[in-house]
Image (tube, rainbow, N blue to C red; front, side, top):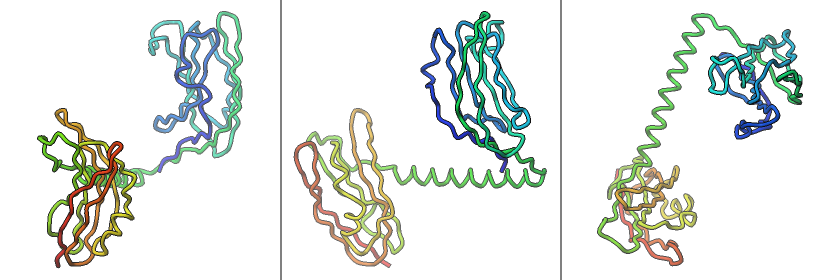
Length: 267
């Protein structure tokens, strides 16, 4: 895969510092643009005549861009300077300090940061095609995983909208499952409840006939109604009837019980 410059640095001023000021503001960032890294951004609202940033051109190819107050390159008064670096060799390099001139006055921009430079690798056409195929496969795999995650988290409420009191319901997708089926065990309430008291281990210990693979929490607001969930993705591992006694869970300052849950796993 094509490499880019890796910057091991920290932002020493936030973007909020970019406001009207009597001194230049500068930011080091690690923002990638294809083969380049935006390494230094400088702003001075009084206008920037020039900047001396003595980069070692034997190590780095630097491209400079200037912008006006509106982020354009139209007006003669330049406010922003940025530098995009491309490494020429693999090395570690200490960025030099810079000096800015505005209206015949100079300002120091101290920089004391190191960058790890990685020279971009040029790929052949065949390698580029292989890389594109790999990236497409990776993109599809990530899409499928995200779609599966969304489906697992999609829960249709089992609590009636006509219930005004606090409700706490324990349910599964169906009443009968087969060996190796994956299913959800859901605890649902129309009030926020203590989800930390029910762990994956707690649910798994309720029966030896299924395993808990993952858990998730969700809150849904729909047409003025509020629903809170904790769900467990389980896998059926043995046949038999399963009975889960009512669970006692804290809602606000009280503890209330869920319903009893019964379902079955068959061959």
